[in-house]
Amino acid sequence: MVTSLHEQLDALGRLVKEGKVRHIGLSNETPYGVHEFVRLAEQHNLPRVATVQNPYCLVNRTVENGLDETMHRLNVSLLAYSPLAFGLLTGKYDESGFLGAGAPSQGRIAKYESMRQQRWARPEALAAARRYNQLARDNGLTPTQLALAFCYTKWQVASTIIGVTSVAQLNEDLDAYGTTLSAEVLAEINKIRWETRDPAL
Image 1: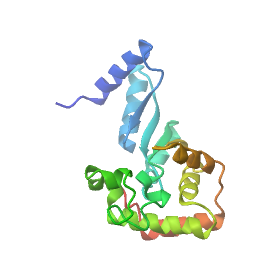
Image 2: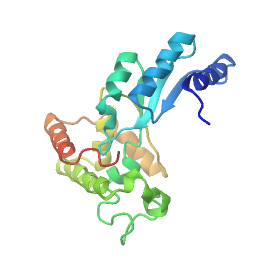
Image 3: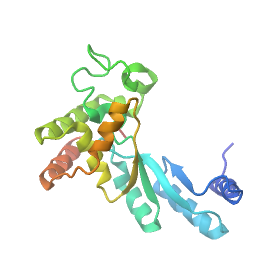
Image 4: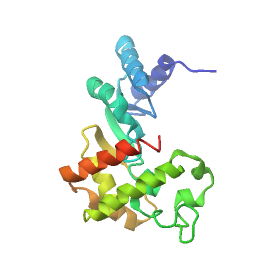
């Protein structure tokens, strides 16, 4: 059974009317889906989508393939999730890979087989991440700083959703805020992307 977008929006509207939620958002949505939710909200006087939570990071910039224009024109914000690509963009898998000697035992990709079946564990994603991580080090940054600064400073991004398993990781992520990337570094980022386009899509 498939629930129509109108029915979904109507149900969310009841939650807003009851005061159980303030605003509604979408997750893993397409340009068409965002347009339809907004159109239906306007047509039926239902709550308007405020935000979309989609993956966005150095190894997955698919948001830029049309969804960003849709969101910009419809005034819907992006909450970028996995800006560190499940740890790929922290450098912790650079030397060991996901299962090699020295692989971080508590890393979700290393720890769970189910995670190794997903986009983040593709060999191409790890290869691209290693290139971005080395670019960071070559420019006096940590991989985390490069990855988060890339997201924080993009016009498409309203906020990022980070996941941490320790206070140290949280502090590192918070310390990355305010990092700016030079035009030269941004050009190198785009060069890598051109050669390894969105391997974690």
